[in-house]
Each structure stands twice: as structure tokens, then as C-alpha cells.
Amino acid sequence: MTVNETLGAWSELFMLLAAMTYLVSFVAFAWDMAAHSKTLRGTAEAEDRELVGAATARAGAQDAAEPADARAGHGAGHRGRGYRTGARSALAGHVADEQMRYTGERRPAARVAVAVMVLAFLVHAAAVVSRAFAAGRVPWGNMYEFCTTGALVVAGVYLLALLARDLRFVGTLVSGLVVIMLCAATIGFPTPVGPLQPALQSWWLVIHVSIAVAASGVFTITFAMAVLQLLQARRERAILAGQAPGMDFLRMVPSAQALENLSFRLNAVGFAFWTFTLAAGAIWAEQAWGRYWGWDTKEVWTFVIWVVYAAYMHARATRGWTGTRSAWLSIAGYLCIIFNFTVVNTLFAGLHSYAGV
Image 1 (tube, rainbow, N blue to C red):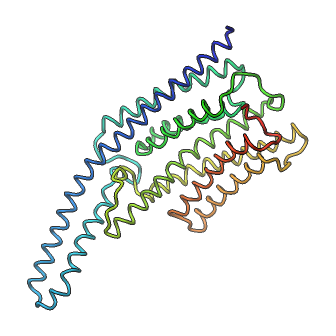
Image 2: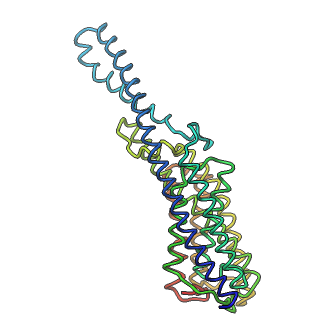
Image 3: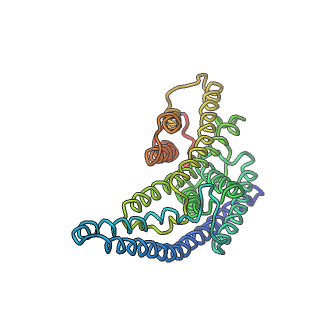
């Protein structure tokens, strides 16, 4: 066995270990959410009972001072206001505030989850670097390498963001998405180590594809935050309507507005990266094929993704598209990325058929 074959085998082993370690992190994040949300639910229910009891007592005192016919007409209203007051108090029950800082205690399960994810990231990085040395090039020349490197970027962006903001509430989704990406790469797009196709043997591969990987990583995190935003918005509407909100784990998630604001800022970064990806791809196409744009399927869908996120940025910034509408636009953009990466790469023939599968 040659040195390159040995490094390729080590890369596959490291990738498997990384996936298993990310899975442990996912379980720890999920355990933290489940355990702590149960504690929060009990605390919030006790607070709501106190508020409702106080409101009911005030209503009873007012009823005693009113005539009998007035009591008959107003009693239900007093009780309704009391219950609505108790329900609205749950809106202030988030453990993470508007700046994504946790106001509760530091939980052991969350600390373990972050530590395990750091370990998984290091093993994952070793797998990607081993693949690069085994191939003697940058490790994003086919779908397997793009997906594994993209998953590394997702984990890296998340861990870096943790240094500035306490984003443990989104750790379950991020670690879960990374596990899915690694499983998809290993099971769906297995590709042995090999040289690049002639059309990819250009220094533009390093620039164009690396920025595309970074943009996809950022969009993956904003996708997870958009999903949480929709769930949180639904819960907040139920609370304001005086209904049982359910989904107690969302008490550990900031408000829908806070999620939307941070998601918009991250999407702005991802959109700038994707704009550069589109422009760099056009320049590379001119050098490789003598034209900047040829309506190849991959080119079209790269532009479609740019249009969707451009519409999101414009609608959110200038047209007042906030709330669930902006979240759905962000999700639509990410679904276009998934379609471009999977369906377009595998089912559509074209000049960009570099899937390697």
C-alpha cells in the first residue's frame, strides 16, 4: 500500500470517527434541551399559577363590590384576563435573551455537548487534511469532498460563533445537520481518492469552490435558525392567544425576532460569498470555455440561488418582509442549494458534471 492509499484509508477512518463523535454531541445537545426545558416548564407553570391566582383574587374583590347583575356579566371577563396575563408571562420565560446570552445557569450537558463537538471538529479536520494530502490537491474536487468539507465549515462557523454569542440552543440542529451531511457523503457519494478532471485543474478551483463551500456552510446555519424562528413564532402566537403553546424546549431559544435579526446578518455574509462565487465562476468559465455564461444547468441554478437570496435581502431590508415570510424565503434559498448540489449534480448532464459518483 502506497503512502497516498494509506492516507486515504486514514481519512475514511477519521471521517467515520468524526461522524460518530458529532452524533454523541447531537445526543448531548438534545438531552440538554429536553432536561432543561422540563425544569423551565415547571417553574413557568408555578409562576403562571401565581399570576392567575392573583388576577382571580383581584377579580373576586371587584365582583364583591359590584351589583349582582354586573358580577354575572363581568366575571368571565375577569377570569379570561387573568389567564391571558398568565399566558403572556411565558413570553418573558426565555433562557436566552435578545443578545443570545443565557440568563440561566451553565448546564453540564451543554458544556459536554460543546466539548464533544470541538473534538469531533478536530477529528473531522484531520480527515479532510488527510484526504487533501492523499489526493495531492485541495479536497473539494467531487461531491464527496465538497460535502465533507462543507460539513467541516458548518461545524467551524458554529464553533467560532459560540465565541461571540451563546448559540447552544441551535446546537442540536447544527450537529444533526453535520451528521446528515457526513452520512450523505459516505453513503450517497462515496468517491475514492483520485486526480482532478482536466477542467478542474485550475487555481480558480481553490477560489471559486472554497467560497461556495463557505457560503453553503453559512446558509446551513441560517436554515437551522429559520426553522427555529418558525417554531418560536408559532409558539408565541399560541401564548398570546391564551392557548397551550407546547414545545417547551423553545423556552431555551430566544424570541423569533432575535432569531430573525441574527439570521439576516448571517445571510448577508452568505449572500456576499455567493455573489463572489457566481462572479468567480463566470471568470473561470471564460478561461476554460471561452464564454462567461452558457446557460448550463449548474450555472442556471447557481443564479437561481443568488436570485432567491437577493430577494430575501431586498424584501427583508426595504419591503418590510419580516417574521415568517422572511424565514420561509431563507428556507427556500437553502432548498435550492440542496437541489443544486444533489439533483443537478447527479441527474443533469452538462459542463459541470463533476460529481465523481
